[in-house]
Image (tube, rainbow, N blue to C red):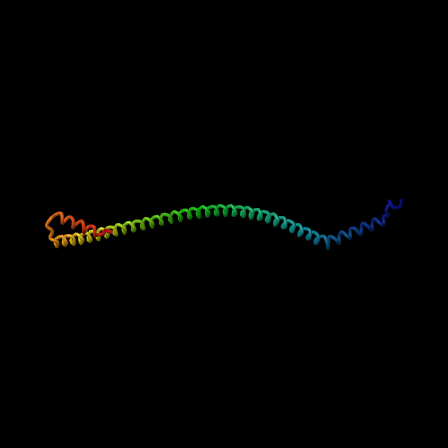
Amino acid sequence: MDLLTPDPGLVIWTGTTFIILLYILKKYAWRPILHAIRVREHTIKYALAAAEKARKDVENIEKLKKQTLEDAAVERDKLITEARELKARIIKDAKNEAQKEADKIIETTRLQLEKEKKDALQLMREQIAVLSVDIAGKLLEQELKTTKKQKELIDKYLKEVSFN
């Protein structure tokens, strides 16, 4: 049972050694250890704060990204709608312009045909006048005495004349 009862000298020397060790630790090691623990604590707090800030930044970036995508989709839809409207307006304008041009060409052609018709009628009148003068001249030349003879001569000259 010697092991369970400590020797008073051993207890004193062990206590003294422990107190000296505590004094040395307090004098030389306790402050640096506490300082290192505080620095580590501040570093951990800073890292946690930075991580929280980074998490919030990522959330904000995700919200911004989502909003940007929504805005881009709205803008895309708007541009597509505007492009379709522009296409329809261009097609309508082109059809209107083509119709105006066609109407102008038709009117020009109609006027040209009327002019050619008038010219042809005028030429025909002139030819009829010339033929009438020729027939009258030939009738007078013949010095016809009877109406029957004059009628036969007129019919003969009319058959000779071609109106084509």
